[in-house]
Length: 317
Figure (cartoon, helix red, strand yellow):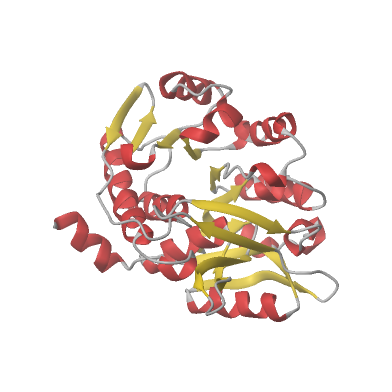
């Protein structure tokens, strides 16, 4: 049984990495995709992880499969499709490490995952099943996501969700809101940024968003605030957890690193989502914040994830 199984996008992040002698931007090929980044973070912290999704049977897809396996991710659920093109993302970085995305994905292989291609054994044998909203942007991956959610939930998995909103992947904000909110009734654990609150909760106020998500039945709620740290909530309690200071190099995968660290601690606790206390949430979030801080100080998504020893050193420093 896997500790965490995730479904969604595995793609290449071409991240800006300096300039050529002629002054043109150079882009570095990095393996990424939010669900895969999260799994890589968890694998680095000692958990067993598995990925379900689709890439093209092309140079990029083969690169990604090898990179995922090097990161310790089980790729039995990864479909290699010779008729599809692997999705690509070009990522420009500001001096502060903030990102601007341009996606090559029309359609990308990740959106073409069909329900009959889902690895049922992985779905039925995982402690946590994780998804984002990118797989909800188009069919057939939307139907596949729903089927996977229902299967994993019915066999006892805790359902984890990161909306991971990317404006350019949606037809408009209304479509994004509808789809992002559609799966909330089946979600046990959610992590969202302050910018994603209006899409998931209909409001940009932290306290009110938490109340909305509680009414939807989400047991464990995490809202990340960048340098402002994190707010965690369970039951009728909530707390703030400060971020760790760092020198930002590349914020790609920072939220995924945080949630990978958070979910790792949740799994290690052995508790159900209904037994987690607010003190547990704070402890999980501290590990998440340390994981994110170390990730931000490095380039790329999957390759930037720190080991548990590095996280522990920062926590104890």
